[in-house]
Image (cartoon, rainbow, N blue to C red; front, side, top):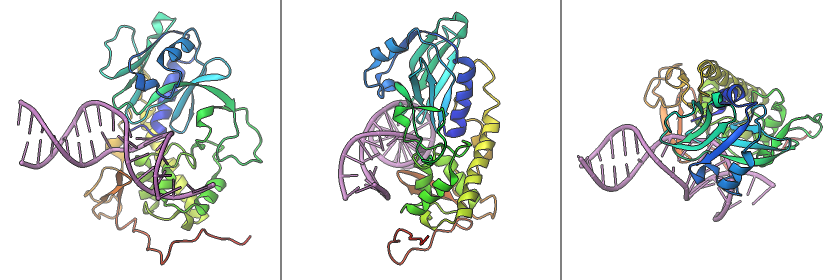
Length: 309
DNA sequence: ACAACGCCCTGAGGGC
DNA sequence: TGCCCTCAGGGCGTTG
């Protein structure tokens, strides 16, 4: 389940093994892998052929490689997607969906492998854009963004992440904290696993109303998100120094270092209380019932917080 | 406008 | 052995 740290590791691998290469051929083996490319698989292949990949970029869980100025190939790994560099002629993976070969025969080939087909590749214009979450008064940056992900907010590791704007959005919103963390238009790169980890570290229950968070609490939560992501990056970032673009969503970090996710009935690493799993939004939330007590129910539906001045 | 739900998809694993 | 059910869940289109 690739979240920001895993996707960043893939970006680094692409930067090393794909950027600067010129594409010779593209083979789409499953149409669903290019479903976001509305013009279809043949058009996708035709428009890539002969172009050269620029530097690998990332926004949240999205990756892209610029081609000619003005357009780019965008990738999302979904749940199970992998981008691999394999030697030419290596046996096809069972769930190989797209193969991109390079003019340099020694460069191997770039493969998109995806069991569950939630991920995919597509071609898009790349525009100068005022990014979601940016202050209108912020100085214009020279950054460009694929048009279809202009709504994706910056991630918490981005130096330009606007913490004040994020906190203001939390105060304004009538939702709960975990929903907000998974809302990629508010903050990007956080998925179910890192949300549960950061909430455990911050001792916040997943149903805590966002409007009740103080600014210091928001800052603390963001710091925990950054810490857990940096820890995952430190582990995952070490294993891509081969011909593989490491993509495996399971960076090894999972088994060893998770404090909340997947630990139902196991003792909380802080207080020993058995951890709980609760069904939540067609998925699961893991938390410690003692360290992360549920918020007290409101007498009535909370009105949007009004603050004078 | 905003919040929340349902669907897309495949394979692993459990129960019987 | 095999069948059916549940679970994993990011993002987007639809509904409320």
